[in-house]
Structure formats: C-alpha cells, structure tokens
Amino acid sequence: MRIYIDRLKEGQENIFNESVDCSEIFDAEEVGVLVIEPVEVSFKAYLAGHELIIEWQFIKARCLVNCTVCNDKFNFQIEIQEGRHIEPLSSIRGAVFNPSSLVRELILLDIPSYAECKEGDCPERETLKRYIEKESYGSTT
Image (cartoon, rainbow, N blue to C red; front, top):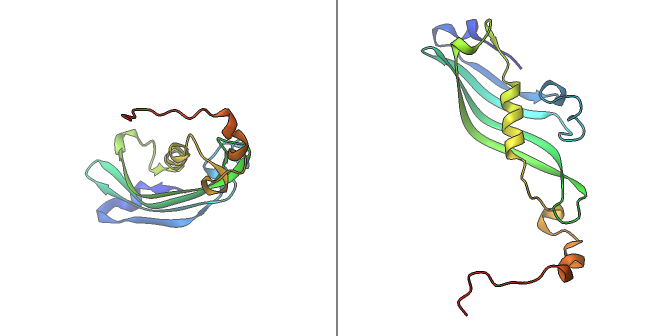
C-alpha cells in the first residue's frame, strides 16, 4: 500500500480499494493476536497545493478483543467510514508515502475499551449479578 507522489501531479488521483495483509500494517506480534484477517481499505489520494490529501471511504478489520465480563477473546468487526487525512509534502521523504501507519492508528483508536461478547449478552453476566450492587445514581425518588 503506497502512494506515489509523482503520479499525483497535474490533478491525478490514486484510488486504492483492496484487501491488505495484516503484516503490512501491524507488527508481527500483533498479527493473529489483535487483527486476524486481511484489512479492507478503500481511499483516494490527491494533491492540493503542498499537501497530500487522503480521503478514506472505509477501513474494515476483524480484531480479537477481550470481553469485559468474562475476559474471553472474541471477534469484533471494526468499520471506519469516511475520513480525511492531510499530510504536508514537506514531511514525506522521497516521492512515496505509505499510509499503513495511518490505517493502523485508525483501527487501534476504534477498538473499544469495553466490549462484551455475544453481541452484548455475555453468558457470564448472570453469574456475576450477585457481586454487583445495584445503586441508584442521581435518583430523586
């Protein structure tokens, strides 16, 4: 996944729409532990003045996260819709820009801090109910 700056001169666009192997985006120890399938990426890139503009159509990844209730790992689908990144040309070394670190950052930011397996209905929740005290916060009754 590379954007060739010299190909974007004179109003050209680079359209990228494909499945990218996890090893191109994530470190070796993260592949299979964090992200388990190829990442679907779709964006277009173009130049505007002295800046590279990347407009994301979508990023899709399947991640393994721990359930907040039972702590078991489960598959969680990340779907990032439409976004924009602006990169000054002065910060790009050479004439090639690799947006892999941007994709990685967007995926990591989208992984929830608290997630529950079985689509929010963890079977262990019933077992833990007796340990959770019900309190009424902000109640006026």
